[in-house]
Every structure is written in structure tokens, then in C-alpha cells.
Amino acid sequence: MCPPEAVASTATAERYYEERSEILLRKYEQVAFEAVHADLLGLIGGRTGNALDVGCGSGRDAAWLAGQGWRVTAVDASAAMLAGARRIHRSLRIRWIRDGLPKLEKVASLGATYDLVLLSAVWMHIPKDRQAEAAATVARLTGQGGIVNLTIRSGASEPERGFHDTDVELLGATLAGHGVLAVNDVTDSDSFDREEVVWRKLTFRRVG
Image 1 (cartoon, rainbow, N blue to C red):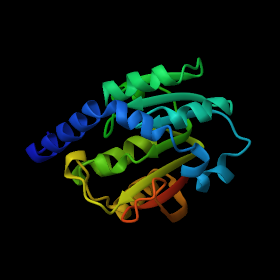
Image 2 (image 1 turned 30 degrees about the vertical axis):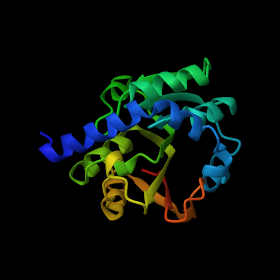
Image 3 (image 1 turned 135 degrees about the vertical axis):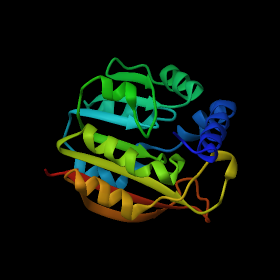
Image 4 (image 1 turned 180 degrees about the horizontal axis):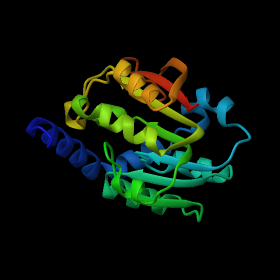
């Protein structure tokens, strides 16, 4: 059972995205996939397969992947964001599902594994006491040789968005326990030029 403070934080984050969905949809579409995920391009260039975009936001990344030939399952916990993403990006290659970490119950029920799991600006929304559970979920959904890519924000506190500190060591150890090992760790500036915001970009690959 989730602690009351974790439930309150999740509700706060959901309310933020529901109330600001139209603003956020326009904002996220202003930045290209290649700009946000430059660290990932060399690892997935020329590849295709099943991709899972968790916290898909405006659907920008899911649409880019679909355009490259990936079969994409795009997931978001916000009904308003998901509806907006479906409206903006109409592709037969994208399956849209309302779901969220730490369990991803609807996604898990499909029985599929994924060659790419993308978690862009997602992990900060997971309470610290549920991050190990979330990491185990991601590991189970990652297929042999599959890539997991996370972008994690730090700086410029926004309590209304329900952010939590990320335990990167716990994340790495949990994934490693499932055979998903770190292959890249870079720090990058903010795509929207917010000087106080820094992004840590972590990439893992299933080897066992």
C-alpha cells in the first residue's frame, strides 16, 4: 500500500498534466527527437523492433520511432495528454495505452517484451520507495539485447509537478539484478534553455 504522501504526490502530478495538457502538448512538440535523444541515436540507428514509450507526453518520440519503422506502444498516465498525443500523431504503428509505473499493469498484461524502452522525464515522478519496483517492471519488459533509456531531470524545483529525487544507484543495481546493465551515462543541458535545469541521460542494455 502506498504511503499517503506518495498518493498525494501522484495526484498532484496527475492534476498538473491534466490541467496544463494543451500548453504542454504544444511545448513538447517544439523540440525534435534528435535534439532530446542525441545520446541514443548511435545505439538505435538502423534498428527496428518493438518500442515502449513510457510517459509518452505529446507522442513526439513515439511518432519519430514509428516513422523509423518501430512498432510502438505509447503509454501515459494522463488521460488528457494521451488524448492529445493521439490527436496530433495518427499512426497505425502506434498503440496508445493509459498506464503508468511502477506496475504498468496494462502493458504487462499484453505479454510482450520490447527492444527499446524509453522513459523520457518519467523517473522523477516515481516515489523513492517505489523506484525499485518500477525498475524491476522495466527490466521484465525489456527483451534480450533490448535498450532502456532514461532522462532524469535535476534543478529548478516544481512541487506542483510531484517530483521526487532519483536513487540512481538503486535504479542501476535493480536493473543489473535482472541482467540489464549500464552502457552510457551523460549529462546534458536543457532543450528549453532553462539554465538551472540539467538532464542526466542513462542507457542500459539487457545482456542476460
